Image 1 (cartoon, rainbow, N blue to C red):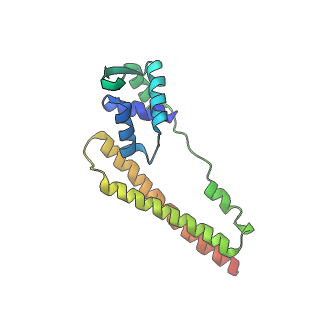
Image 2: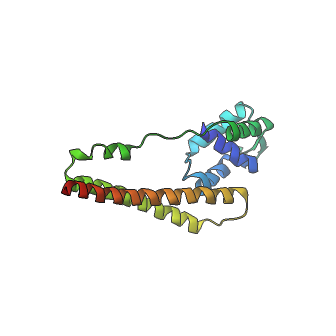
Image 3: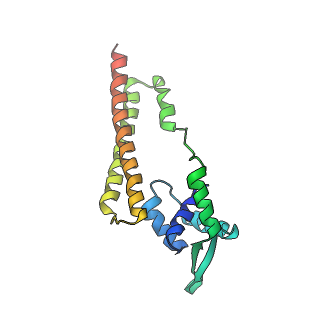
Amino acid sequence: MSLRHAMLGLLADQPASGYDLMKRFETSLSNAWPATQSQVYGELGKLAKAGLLEVAAEGPRGRKEYAITDEGRAELHHWLTETPPGTVRRSEALLRVFFLNHLTPVEATAYLMGEAERAAGHHKALEEVERKVDWGDDALSVNGRLALEYGLRFTAMREEWARWAAEELMKSRER
């Protein structure tokens, strides 16, 4: 459901083609809600059919530029104000923690340190995004920086937790 709202949100700022939307996803939303080209183009068709978007202009080679309709703005507003966000409650990484006792101490510690390294790598990638993006004062830049900061803090916490957990596991096995 959120792909449709991500696209409505992007189009609420200005009309865009499918190609333009893909570029916006890549430079802004991809760390929060990635989308493939086939998903974006498929959703454009669904949104237009539902009356939430309209073709605002047609260009060469069948290029279509889409604009949000009043119904689309109403749907975006409803989603932002009246629909609680879904929360992901499943984590394969944490599920595995429950069964670390089936590994040797070395294997269990290696798993946790691997999680720390994965989090550190993701954190580093987000720092690179932060350096590369030409942040402006527009709404997408301001809100994008807020979302990026969430990602930076979350990945830092995951790394810190995994390192702590590895130490705790080692201490508990020494007792």
